[in-house]
Image (cartoon, rainbow, N blue to C red; front, side, top):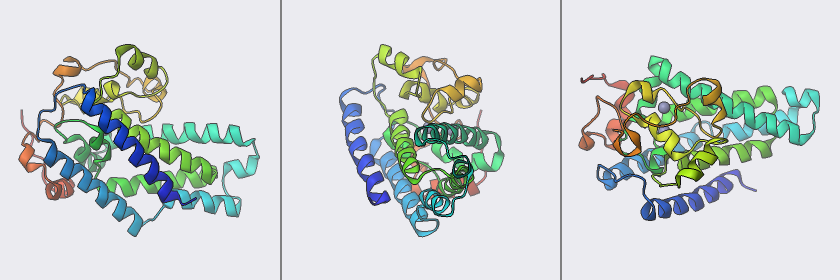
Length: 265
Ligand SMILES: [Zn+2]
Ligand SMILES: [Zn+2]
């Protein structure tokens, strides 16, 4: 099966389902016009996909095919059962992406790239697609490196990448999950209410709830926090220094990592 079509198919189905859920069961009333935000977020996503296809291609999947063909990596050496390998690979990749996310908040030049994601004044499923192309390319190289070192099976990589995209959409979705569902889901995975705190304007709140799929890493890393201080309805989203919705267009988002940060307040 074609890797790109598999991912695109899952993505489109989930996007449609979560989009419907956001329309009928919204968590918050959006503060800014959807048209411009969606133009910026979907525009960045298209540029990300094209940039990756033109430069690195499906590098993470290709790394798995290469490791498989050449017998490279830890799993090829130890010969554990497929189920054990798959479970360990999924855990390690999810933990690695948690650490990558922490690094993008702590290392200034990585934060310059990552703040494009945080500059969204509302959070909905399209925020899950809003990343600077350089951050996407660096992340692909990092994941490919881990896949090579472990010798992850190509099928597991396919499942992992699909899960990662699915959770990027889900955790940003502006959907009102029943509180009991949210509480039960959080025992295992990250939820929209959990990740919304990460988009708070208050930096200590931004530096929390970094997880992508499993909530375990935030609990282990002591970065797990239940709710925003001002609650799910009261929390102000975005960056302190970027409050002008009209300025957050696609062109400016692409240039944002290379422009000076004007701090306010
Ligand atoms: Zn972040
Ligand atoms: Zn986010």
